[in-house]
Length: 471
Image (cartoon, helix red, strand yellow):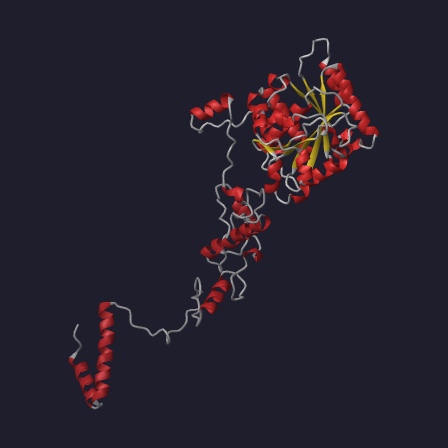
């Protein structure tokens, strides 16, 4: 309502005696107070002059302003509980939060926050252990672990198990692939489904893969295996050719076979065929001996070699007048030359163990193959060969020898093959039987493609046993 007339007149009289500037200031102040009262707006308060309210602390103090990024990072680390070092916080140094107990009394009630604590501070404090009774009470869900606790657990796990990388553990990033089955029902299903159904190799294929692995092992140095017998016609040369071709098939480096038979050996003829050998220049071991000093490379040596696929051969002397002239010293010269270019060498020794070159052959041999047959005479001569070796200073060669029994003539049922095998297997490292095969029994060209699968497998077993004796 309007003010009384006397009051307005009194105010006018008082202002009349004041200076003009003071009068205008008072009018503006009075007008501002009346305006705030009429409109209900908050008066403008200067924060610097306003008194601090100490009745309730703020929830989280505002972060102080810093003059550099390093100071800001250090201040942030201090607020989250990290050491104020100015560097990246070390997660592994933050202690893990204690685990809640396995069981707790169900009658315990949740602990109410005190007057000094705000409810949101009680539930979200990062470094405060939770109440076990509250966590174990029915219907209560324990709070998730703090960020520092999760980081500490992860850092501890990484410290115990280093992170793999593509260099040290490339197999961890690639799913292992099953070997492809070959043949049989497994191979048929694999081919029909385009490889989507892979049952893996069969037990027989796994055995074949293991034989291939043993044959193809890398060797450090050069090794020599001598193939000998006391009786002719029992598969000595055919075994040398079959095993040599098998080694050439599976090994990365080609093997070499040497014909040291003093009785006009036919090693090259059995590997190449009579017709092909006659068409070639018939260089023999005698030609190699005459020029051994001038050979200083594999290219120069190849002039005196014959090749049956990847099997390299040195032919024996065919002239009966000079075939028995190879001495132990001459053989050792040949062996020394071969060792510089071939890691595996096979030597076809011929019949007997007393001819001139035999002492050099046994001296440089790393292991032996003793050829035998299922005939009673063949088994006896194989045992006599081992006995002679053991009694003439070659006991290690006899003990580690591989006895190969070739069933060439299909002896009658009166011969107990099992008894012969049991008798010979007890005096050698390993005994392997080669089944009857016309590709071996005819005494002509020996090729792996013309042999029966059982015969080829027997030659693989012999080749694996030979390499086993090297390592």
